[in-house]
Image 1 (cartoon, rainbow, N blue to C red):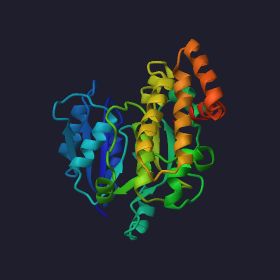
Image 2 (image 1 turned 135 degrees about the horizontal axis):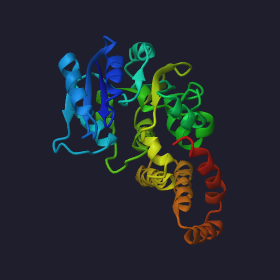
Image 3 (image 1 turned 180 degrees about the horizontal axis):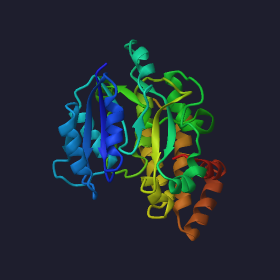
Length: 313
């Protein structure tokens, strides 16, 4: 295997050395591609030092040297990659020694286009643990049982509570399949949940298989400056960010003729649920009355979905 590991870097000078070295422990990692995204800290200098120290580390910035976000940074990393496979890693997360064990066997089958695994949690400080333990605990982010590739897309969309989740940190893809079958990679206008939207579409276009879903193959690094902190502190309105996510999924699903009407309706109801959640109080009640008469299931299912998915997406 020749794996390109793509790492978008923003405000992560403390964590990026560990992320890079966790990827370099594998002989199958052909290159580690760092996309430095105009960090306000000293991350660029740290990345330069890593690129000087390790031959397999390649450093890039966006052509205009400005900040573009995680999605466009991953897109640039995919564009620059030269491996046969692409894996992703956030700059404050890290791989475990078993990261590619399942992949080595599964990718012997040429029909396997992607493999996903389980993600663990590492708290970088007691303060971070106190703040986010209720959200993450010590639980694995994983799919709960082994599903066929055709079950992955509807499972994520329609039965998240019993299907589970997989993380971009645990995903490995055939580069050719990714580039040839995905009409778009990461959507640049989504500043949050861009990975969730990408995974929805990816599981529709590519055949994804479960790897190690019972043990963590990578660790989510939780600290006070995670992007989730911006949501938690109210800097980013979670209802707005989720409505943008589901609006994007709704628009995409509406253009795909082969997606079943049942799933399209469910997606539209999810969109409506978060549209209601973000609305001002007066408008919210008007929308609720409208859907009570036109599609009451948007309200019934929406209340469950909002409460349940706020802790997941």
